[in-house]
Length: 133
Image 1: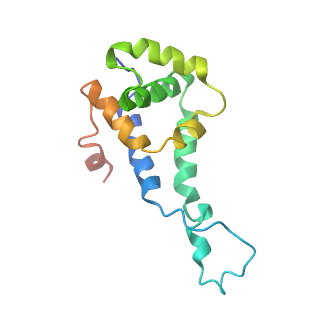
Image 2 (image 1 turned 120 degrees about the vertical axis):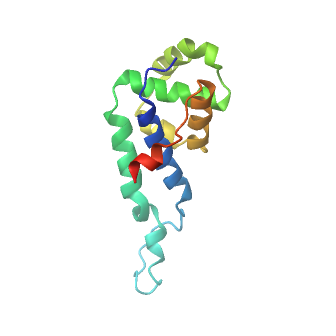
């Protein structure tokens, strides 16, 4: 059973959904923003505050929480079952190379996998967003 606080996982899910909804836009170039009708706001720089907030949140977690977040993603993706939880956490710790946030944010459908992972443990984010408003 995961020990990570469900609210922390739900925060990551909400922020990951916000990032998934962002338009990746165009790559920045050397053009003049006024000449290209300011389309450069659709580049990474346009949504970096959301991404930065999520990166900082994940990196502020301790090593055990980060490993459980990765393991929860793996369970939701079907790489492990809820019964294999301890093994998933151990492997998440052993396989870690670099920042956990970089790994997780590179996974398409991260929010969906985390939700599915929570569901495997009969947990959910129901009511989480209501508490945030």
